[in-house]
Length: 435
Ligand SMILES: [Zn+2]
Ligand SMILES: [Zn+2]
Image 1 (cartoon, rainbow, N blue to C red):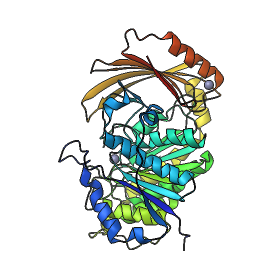
Image 2 (cartoon, rainbow, N blue to C red; image 1 turned 30 degrees about the vertical axis):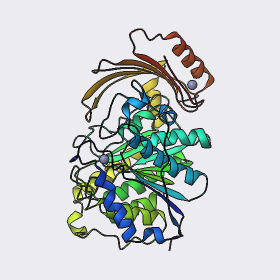
Image 3 (cartoon, helix red, strand yellow; image 1 turned 135 degrees about the vertical axis):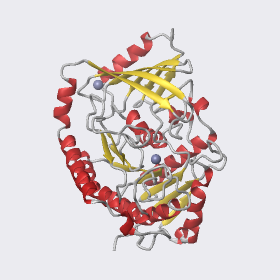
Image 4 (cartoon, protein in one colour; image 1 turned 180 degrees about the horizontal axis):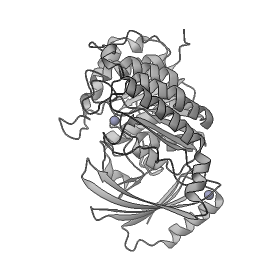
């Protein structure tokens, strides 16, 4: 018998926000879950406590994003409440009021990258990243592991913490060759000063929870044990479910609950999941019971049939190889950094980013100062086909004095000129400047 835990729940269904009335990311997503939570009497348990979501501020957003031209232009009130719900979950856990918390909020956030020209993958701002920025500001420097179990690659979270050695961004998802956003492969492994702090585990379509739990045991948990986080955050996307209309995986509610029971996240934040009636109510109830340390063995979908979801032997072998490769990659991170960075003083990376929700294309050049003392100074030149071109100087959390000095100088010397704006973001000192 597991010990029961005090679990905080924060609901925000965002009834006035939808991309369009028939869009899969719409307001009904949480209605059935809320009904199921009431029907199962979860709120009658003494150790499950519901809280109202708070409201995130523009300052909270500017701590981790550079929004073009500014935060207010890319969000609605719903986004501030969704991120605010994640922040409430963090506050309740870090103040010790509860043992863990689950923010069941929308709109989701894990496809929103550092620079935001618009919405992509149904996301405008990254609610976990905003929460992490808030945690560091209010509760001090923390080593944080974000385990993204959404079926889609958590490319936005990866981008925001790409150069931060103190934030482990591990995403496990359906292979990007078969699903949006088309990224999330082994070679995406973190910036020059943070190699290994980004880990991607692509899985073949039709993987079920057996494969997922195998990877959890043989790769994810050993990596977490080595990384030694102060906090584990689960970007809990539920679109791996066998009934999800936009993906191809074979998870059940039991699988999700078991995953949660073993991962033991301090904070879970809802991401995707589009099987509104067939999956979300069962998966969410399973996760809540697992977080609270209560029995979840009875939580089953009406059409639950585990034999039809069994993996082939071929698929099993692929999964075993994947777990082995990932752990080897992680173990080799220092040697890989040596090989990739060598004697370079600056490392550049060019990216093309497509905002599928808003139809915007962006081209980015990121320059990172190689530094053995911190995540490094980051400079971004970004141009979008909206005509907006911006430049941003970013100091990651834990920036060393030399990187800070160079960053301040770069910002002082860069004039708007051909840029619409020049931004300065100092994540440690909580400074955000625009000119
Ligand atoms: Zn997803
Ligand atoms: Zn440095």
